[in-house]
Structure formats: structure tokens, C-alpha cells
Amino acid sequence: MTIDAGTGSGRAVIFDVQGRQIAIGQQEWTHLSEPDVANSMGFDFRVNWKLLSVCIQEAISHAGIHSSEIAAVTATSMREGILLYDKDGTELFGMANVDARADREVKELNTLYPDAERRFYEESGQTFALGALPRLLWVKKNRPKMYEKIASMNMISDWILTRLSGEIATDPSNAGTSGIFSLEKRQWAPEMARELGLKDDIFPPVYEPGTIIGEVTRKAAEETGLSVGTPVVMGGGDVQLGSAGLGVVRPGQVAVLGGTFWQQLVNMPTAKTDPNMDIRINPHVIEGISQAEGITFFSGSVMRWFRDTFAQDEKRQAAEMGIDTYELLERMAAKVPVGSHGILPIFSDMMHYGRWYHAAPSFLNLSLDSQKSSKAALFRSLQENAAIVSMLNLESIFRFTGVETDTITFAGGASKGKLWSQILADVTGKVIHIPAVNEATALGGAFAAGVATGEYTSIEDAADSLVKWQRSHEPNSKNRVLYTDISLRWQEAYKAQLSLVDKGVTTSMWKAPGL
Image (cartoon, rainbow, N blue to C red; front, top):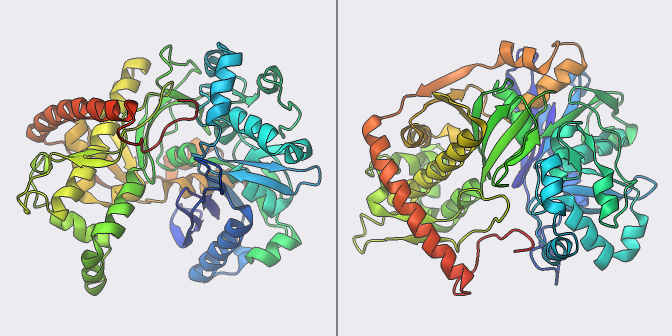
């Protein structure tokens, strides 16, 4: 079983030893702002543990098995999110992945230590934007009594394992996103915290994915329905485990993960970082490999927003037809020509890791012709836009890494859409391979659990043996030419929209702390 704490939901997924998905339990959740704390996104560990416990129970029930048949359990999660504990191992505080409350603290750190962010990036591959250092400083300044109690810190996937086993630990792939970490050594870099006047003794042991760190306790068994004594195995960050679940386990391989956020990933055999600080570098779950990463903000969230805001009729119609709402919207969008009648969605920008902010959410170039600005056209434009931003991020990473490829592995909820997959092929000019298991992140976790129990010799071995393909999409060269022109126009439009944010006319969709 892999327990997955995503940005928009929690889930528990059970696989057999051949990598076939047996059952899933899922609960949506939200991360709420704290009163009077601007840009906060707290992780409610009390409520969310109850939801995850329901997911676990649902998965076991749907699988029709006894919990004792689960050979091992592991966890994965959105990265960057952190949990803080007291000396007794009790949670004090949690922050979700894009919590941006530490805006002033980022500015303060860059003022007091003007070269620290670049030096730390060169070692960790992370900037201050989503890292833990400014957040810890925020707690120190705004919750001083709580800060004094902090004895340990780990990431959200680690927290799940802590709840299950009582052990506080972490792994390189997720801890690396804290920014207090060495890419090369795959260990904490506490000297970074010490240099900034923060606690340097709160960092727990680091274990590689696939290591047994404990067993399910009696308390956790009572809460979740798991069996006492079930091995608890170190997992990792959702993107890196997701890459493993896609078979992207060797240098030069490329993937796009289409979830709440979209990630574009290229495996590298070294821990080098980008001189321009535009690209994020993370430890993979595979020792000896780092990943260059681009991120497209909120692509999945924007689709959910569109569905819930504009597609109520389609929701009802899809329910009557016995299909998913997105499938119906795709059928409608397939009738819209390439370019969506000129509509330019302004949501996520391409990644500029050192100075990262977005324009105000909007649709540009709408027509008064209702057919040209229909729901189907708007929906297709969002699909095209996510693919275009992914292409721009990948092109930036290819220039940095020198990687050349003709194929991209595409997974996550977005890859279920055949139209969206084809659009990605047409936009990038690459052959798009879709895996048979869309829950690639959870499958990567199952690989780690299988390594721990001796089912597989390594995560790479599991990936080579078990990753299967559902379909492939060949690019359409004529559409590729059209999308190249659309991409250029979109980039010009986005620059103009960012200038309105700079002038205070509109409000950024998301802005990194400190900007």
C-alpha cells in the first residue's frame, strides 16, 4: 500500500506484486489560510490524518482483502510541505507545499545574507521560494513559544510514516525540497540553518526509499485498519516516486506528470545546478541521479475550477451518461480547431525559479461569437496552454542539461485524456507514451515497498519489469507548426499581463515569498 498526500486530496492505493492496481480509497481536502496570516496554507494534520485513515479503510474494503495481506506500507506526498514536532514526537505545526506566508522573511534573509540564496541553491538545487528556511524563520518570529518547542522536522510523506510507526525520519527526494539539503551528499545541510540563526539540531535521520524504518503501531492500526506489525517503508516525494512508477529511472529519460501541478522532469547523472537559477534540481529516489525540474502551477486545479464553475450542466449530463465530466468536456473540445479560436489563457507562466510569480488568472482574446468562446473552446484552450508551458519548461531544461529525446512519458490524471495527450504530442513534437497505471506515484511507492520486502532487487529492477504501456500518441507535424506560432503569441501576451501585476493594476495568481 502507498498512502499519497497530494495537494488536492489524500489517497491510499493497493497493488499486487505484479504492479497491478487492486484498489484505491480517496478523499478530497483543502489547505486553509490562517486568520490574519496572508498567503498561508496550513496543513491540518489532525483532520487530514482522519481523512487518510478513511482512505486506508476504503482501499482495504474495496480490495476485498484482510489487512494482514498487505506486505508493507509506504507513503508519498506533495513536496516542500513540512511538519514540526516537539521532543515527545507530537506535531506542533504543519504547512502545505505552496504556503507563502514567509514573504517578509525571504526579503529579510536576502537583505541580511545577500549571497546566501545563490550559495545554498548551488548545494541544494532549491531557492528560498518554497523552502523551509524562511518558514522556520517565520515561526521563530511569529510563534516564538512554539519555535522553542521544536525538536524535529520532516516532510508530509514522512509525517504519514511517523503516524504509522512513531519514527521521525525522512528521505532525500522529499527532504531535498526543503532547501536545507545537499544534492551531492543526499544528507541534511544543517550549517545552512545555523548560518541564518536557526536551529540546526532538528533534522532527523535520512533513509533511502525502500528502507524499513519501523512497524505499524497498535494505535495506528486501530485508527486505520492496518495490521499491527506491518512493515513501514521509507517512501519519497510524489514527483520522484512518480518518475519511478513511470520507469523514468535512468539518466536522460524525460517525463511530464500532469496532476494538480504539472512537472516536467529530466534525469541527470550529476548534481549540477543552473547558473541562471531558473531550473530546480532535486534528488531522485534513485541514488546517483538528480532531476532537473520545471513546474507549471495549478494546471489540474484550474481544470477543477473550470469544471466546478462553468460546467454544471456538463456534470449532470456526464452523470446521466455514466462518464466522467472531463471526458465529456474533452469530447466537446475535440470539435474545436487547433488554437481554440485564438483564446489565450493566462494562468501559469513558464518557470523562473529565481524570480517566480504569475499574472492574474484570465482568458484573453475572447470573441463575441458564442461558438468561438464556448465552454468547449475555453476548455481546449486550457489544455493547449498547459502543454505549451510544459514545452517551454522542457526546452529550457534541454538547453541546460544537453539532453535530447524523441519520447516523453506522460502520466497523472491529465494523461487519462486522449485529446490532452495528443495536444501534448503536437505541441512538443515528441511521441507521448501513456503508462497503463495512471497512479504512477503510488506505483513508485509500491516499488519501494517491494524492495523493502525483497520482492524486487531495486526500484530500477521493479520499473524495468512492471511498467506497462497503455497507448502512444504520435505528433502531428502540421499542428506542431501552428502551436509554435501560438506559443510565441502567448509569451508576448503573458509578458504584458505580468506588467499589469507590476503596476498594481491586477493581482498575481501566485507570487513566491520575497517578491
